[in-house]
Each structure stands twice: as C-alpha cells, then as structure tokens.
Length: 133
Image (cartoon, rainbow, N blue to C red):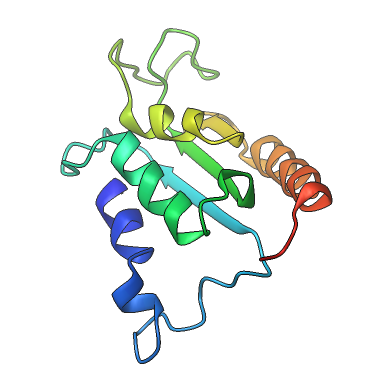
C-alpha cells in the first residue's frame, strides 16, 4: 500500500506525458483513501518517506492532503469482538498520523460509513483553509 502511494505521486507519471498527467492539481486537495485488511508487509519505504513524497507532490503543503486509512485493529479495542487483532505497530496508521488531516478506521467495524463521514468533514475543514497554488 505504501509503495503504491509512493509510486502514484512521483513526478514522472504525473507530469506531461505521464500516465497520471493532470491527476495532481495545484488547485485541489488530495484525498487518499486506503482500505487494507492485513498488515502492509510488502512495502519497504518508511511512513515518513511516503509522507514526504506525498507532501512534495502537493507543493510542500501537508494541509492539502486528507489521509483516510481503514486497516485491521492493532489492539484489543476492535469494534467487533470476533475480529482478530495484532498487538503490533501498523505502518499505515503511522503514515496517517503524520498528516494534519487524517482518519483511521477499523476494518472489523460493522460499517465504514462513520469513517467516511468523518473523512468528508476533514475534507471540508481542509478545504476551508486551502489556498490553491
């Protein structure tokens, strides 16, 4: 997941002639939504490196990004008692926490609607403060 996000914001694919040309716009927020029900064990870049790449893609403005991560619970505070959890660090949660506007949800929840509603509120908040480049 982190590797895919890192790759998606690279200049060579977002610039002129790139396959994502026009995806990253200086006049718009970037809302990243990741729903992942296992550990992100295949990504090797640290959350900080991915954060830095995303922020750089938004012209250095971390406030121009809303990060939504719905991932497996890492404590016994899972919303569904039948859901497995692991008492280990989760790099996706660590990544989300680096952004000023973030939402972290539990894949074991009965519904993701509360997380998406909160994400919409975060988008509204970020948008009210956003100054297009």
